Amino acid sequence: MRLFRCACHSGLSYWSNVARAPADVGGGTRALPRSGGPVDASVLHDLAAASRILADQGVVDAFGHVSMRHPSDPNRFLMSRSLAPALVTPDDIMEYDLDCDCVDAQGRGSFLERFIHGEIFRKRPDVMAVVHSHSPNVIPFGLIDTPMRAMFHNAAFVARGVPVFDIHEKFGATDMLVGNSEKGVALAEKLGDKDVMLMRAHGSVATGPSLPVAVFRAVYTEVNARLQFQTAMLAGGGNIAALDAEEGRLADEVNLKSSARAWDLWKRRVGF
Image (cartoon, rainbow, N blue to C red; front, top):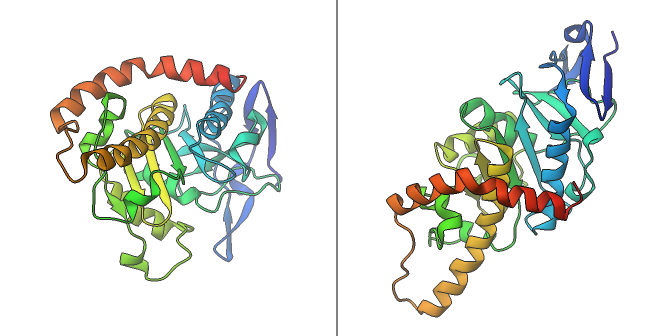
């Protein structure tokens, strides 16, 4: 049976017999997942805004994506169709299960690397939103032995540690993309309980207990990388007085409470 969807600005809704709708998955056919339920228009609005904010802040360009866990079903997540982040509107948001099967694609393309999001949501019930980007100042830190450190209080989450996912370690030579669940599982395992992670010769992942916090962390991971490079040049091999783990913990508690200030500003900048 065909799956019907209303994707107007009043929110997403799904009806009848969704589970019997067939989907081609891995060369076979299986039932499409049921929806997690209607989503308020404000949620779709915020997720579209997040994509545009990340573009406006120089974290993503034509590539990269952001997702959030479904507000009513922890086993579903919301994500844009395959589209440049700066062009995303609320009507572009689609729903997925944690296997990264779309509830109702309606002929629209999905991001190949949606498995980054699905497997992190599966492994980390505390994570409510995920950003994947290729922000330019971050990439070098995934290629060298020098770890990323927290240069200032807005990047306090970095002080918890930033692992590096090297896809070659488990999968050998690849196209560097996390294009299936097996690679997504390996990535989520490497992330562990940390807030951000680098991906060698690729980009990074930022997570958060809310969409605004995940966006905040993605933005300030890029800012922190730029500041660390500048600081290292000034230090000339000398000591860098970065935040230690306890300073990071204390400062991040403040950031979690105050990140809405940045979110409100950034939304206004992109017209949302």
